[in-house]
Length: 260
View 1 (cartoon, rainbow, N blue to C red):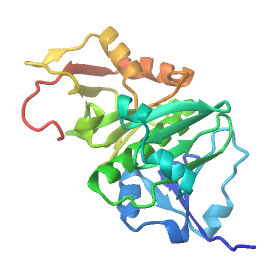
View 2 (cartoon, rainbow, N blue to C red):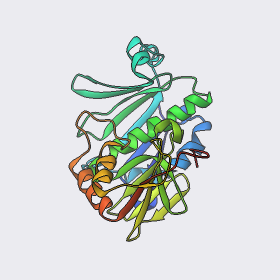
View 3 (cartoon, rainbow, N blue to C red):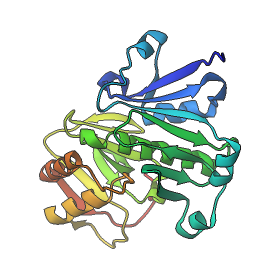
View 4 (cartoon, one colour):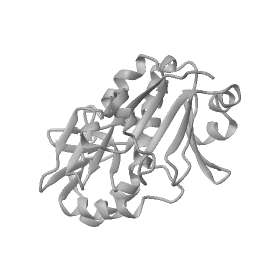
């Protein structure tokens, strides 16, 4: 019997999120480690790994492996993906299947803890590494959805959340947890106080225009990183309402660098 050595990583370990990645030791490309660190994943010790409980309702474990020959063909592209962009979401046997062309395929069976990600065998180009970041953000947004955690393409600057289009952010995302009163980004984490400023840079604007609360609720509801046939979860809807009540938002003038 093959003796497989797995390496486990937990999302924001100090906050005890039940969200994990695991790689075969021989398949973990060193190039991935910096990306995993930026996204907030920390490697677990053998003792910590043994404490993972797959029985908890919100536990999600994504197994990341190299794609089979058949999946490699699917990852490399199809007419469908060419028409509608690099990403697609389909249903196969009642299970959601997410594909990012030239990067990977993720299978996320609902209500089950074990998910799978098959990766292209030669991820090395900058565009593919950005694609991998996007794939992992999609995983996080889906894995955290039932916990009411919100995820948006963008960054944090001067304690302001800047929300962008995906191609503006280069896959960088901001994760907001109202329950933990914490905001996570590539720069680390920030405590969420009694008030939050949000700048919307995903739409052309000539000047700094304030958004109404109704506009903000609509924007926060439809602009998350979550890709799902069911839309945002009930707990995410509650989080959007709470976030909108403590936030002031505006359209940012479209000038200077869009990727701050």
